Length: 123
Length: 123
Image 1 (cartoon, rainbow over the protein chains, first blue to last red):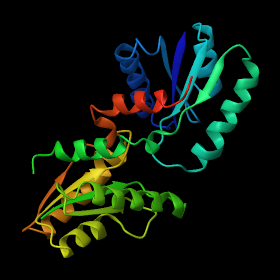
Image 2 (spheres, rainbow over the protein chains, first blue to last red; image 1 turned 90 degrees about the horizontal axis):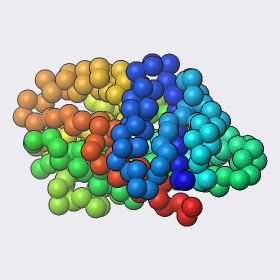
Image 3 (cartoon, one colour; image 1 turned 180 degrees about the vertical axis):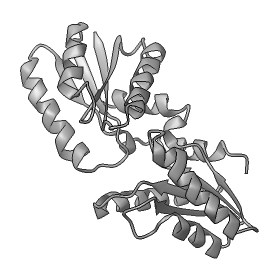
């Protein structure tokens, strides 16, 4: 059973974290063929941190988990913090294949997304 | 002459800001049919702020500028700060049509981008 764990930075503004949770719920509905489980977790400043998110996926029966950093830039969080926490979790779940996807900003589709957003403005 | 101004938050980490500038340069090469001018600017913590970015587009001969907030979440920056600064600039350039695009995270393509990033992991 494949799981996708969307990992955002987390914000003191609860509404901002809720937005990521809602996005994960929307993803769950739309990509149920690829991922039976979709959850959101945060690096900091939120209730559900990365280890909690991985635990949640495991509890729901995940046999593999793709952790996707929902970050635009490849700063310290993307390069060190998220990989470090995921690495620690890997040792705790020897029966689950836990992988780290490239952060969102690294996607080749980013250019299309930018152009599409810009073109949505009638100018 | 249409211009696209990519507006990121800005970071104390110069490398992170450089990444956005590089993205704007890549966009300029790839979407020259839609936008003759593509520049990057920042809300804070960088040399080129939003008014500087708009001025730069104007100097390069822009007749219209689409300002695109390169933000994932609709926090205060997206809801108040960027629109407020853009609004101030609109008054200063009466001959240029300056529009604000929805922030990146609002794009319908975001789901595709997430799935594509997750699927790039061999799992």
